[in-house]
Every structure is written in structure tokens, then in C-alpha cells.
Image 1: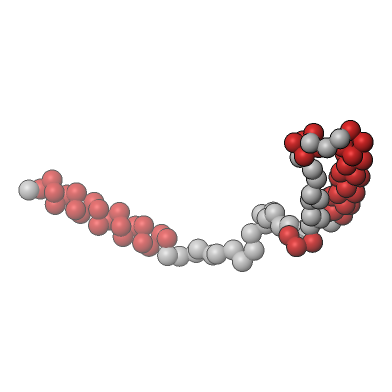
Image 2: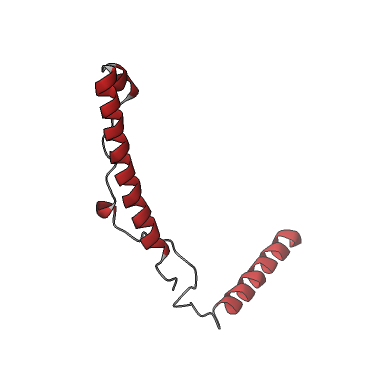
Length: 97
């Protein structure tokens, strides 16, 4: 009967020590200096990927039409790549706080 009483007494003493030690001198920081990633552009202003023909669509065309279509798709993708490069370049020049 003394062992459970002794354990209970030790538990109460430990709880009292923790309660008195944790309640004093604790300050909560107002600002935490941790970098948080944020998007530099909104999702609505991202360049839209152009619609290009699939390989099956290209192979269904005759050679002349397929050549013109492939060059047209290539030009669309070059314009899209230039827009993406401009966005990446702009985002990379934003100064870090």
C-alpha cells in the first residue's frame, strides 16, 4: 500500500514542479524569421499553354499540310516559352526581404 501512495506523491510533486516552472517567464514571439514561399505572380496571370496538334493528328495529314502545321505549332511553343522566360526572369529579380 505504500508503493502506490509513494508513486502518487511523486506524481503530484512532479506536476507541481512543472506547473510552477512553465507558468513564469514564457514569452511568445510576435515575429518568426522564417522564409515562407509565396507566388510572385497570380495564377490568373500565368501564360496559358497553347493548344498544339497531337502526333496522331499530324500523321493523319498529308506531308505538305503536316509540315505547315508542325511549323505553326513550333512557333506557338516558342512564343509560349518566351512568355514563361519573361515571368521567371521577373520573379527571380524580386528582392528577398
